[in-house]
Amino acid sequence: MKQSLITGLLAGAVSIAAVAPAFAEEVTLTMWHQHPEWKDRTEAILSAFEAAHPDIKIDLEEIAGTNYSARLNTALAAGEAPDLFGLPAGPETLAAAKAGYAMDLTGQLDLSSLRASAADAIDQDGSVYGVPILGTYSVGLYYHRNIFEDLGMTPPTNQAEFLEMCAAMKDQGVTPLIVPASDGIVPSFMYMMLTASVLGVDGFAELRRGERKFTDPDLVEAARFLQQIGDCMQPGALSTPYVEGKALAALGQGAMMPGGSADYAGYQEINPDVDLGVVPFPGVGDNPAATVTGLEYIYLINSESEHPEAAKTFLQWMMGDEAQQMVVDTITMTTNKNVVPAENRILEEFIEAARSNDMRVFYELPETGNVWAVAQQNTAALFLGEMTPEAFAELIQDAVVISAE
Image 1 (cartoon, one colour):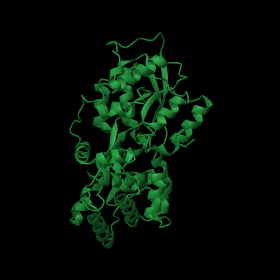
Image 2 (tube, one colour):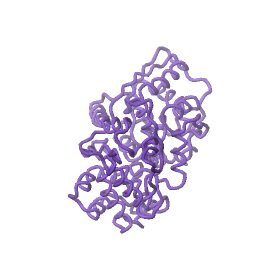
Image 3 (cartoon, rainbow, N blue to C red):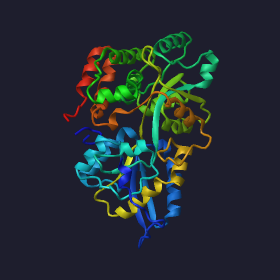
Image 4 (cartoon, rainbow, N blue to C red):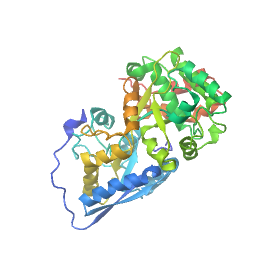
């Protein structure tokens, strides 16, 4: 088992009654969530649900992302998991379902409000075990607008510009890039964006079919650029945890930080005056800058929940227009095709950044699901020079699973 948990669809949707079912007595659903920095925003959405459904209460427990998977694994194995829990869409959700931990929701919920990409992401061979209720995200490059203005610079678009800017900032005593790299997660997102710049959507499809490889010379250059970026990160980056790195970035201790659309709420919690902009991550060589996109954790119903109907009522409401308007206005991008952000500049910049060269995240797809873990485990060795870009690329390629069909 991995630590992260053992690590077309709309046609199956059903009509949901306009009036939610009433329950004989008040029901309390337990829910685990892995974004403590969203707590106030999440609780505001849950309060709106409880106002609409006074017979259902949500007992929310926030667990830091670095501890979430281990706690959930333990709770599931012990039969003590909450009624509602989140997992990444893709292989991890399917593994939980096959292990008997998640209820089969196929045909149990109306999915007609979902964007096609979200419906595709939760499709597990024609079955549904979890749905997106707290949005989707894109990952790009945050930059402090005030720092760049003071330096008379504009954000980099390619490898040469980035490395030249990195050297110029260091000469002026400015840390170019804040990267919390202790667990390898943010560096792995950087690697995904660099490969996205080389592959694009069509190339990624070819890689998943086995027609392209991470060991191809142009993709080895993505690993080489990642290694070069190590010199631009803050001192002690490899021992910097996510929470600390996020605080350093929010407080302007560096000019840039890789991050997702959902990170902005956390930056504002730390520094209400933070003045950020967003661009795609600089491209490898002459390749275009790129972003990657994925779902926030989708929510599953514990197969041992004593309140499955109440849990389905909650998930259905959370996918609706009212809840998703709150999500997009206060947290991150939404999967609801009926909802648009209300004057949210950062989300608009993310949407623009992802418009031209965007790729799905590795871990949502069966062919590249294992790549995510391998990248996390080996980026430190790459930064330290203990591993060559060629050796890194070979490990990554060995983790790809190509169907025999």
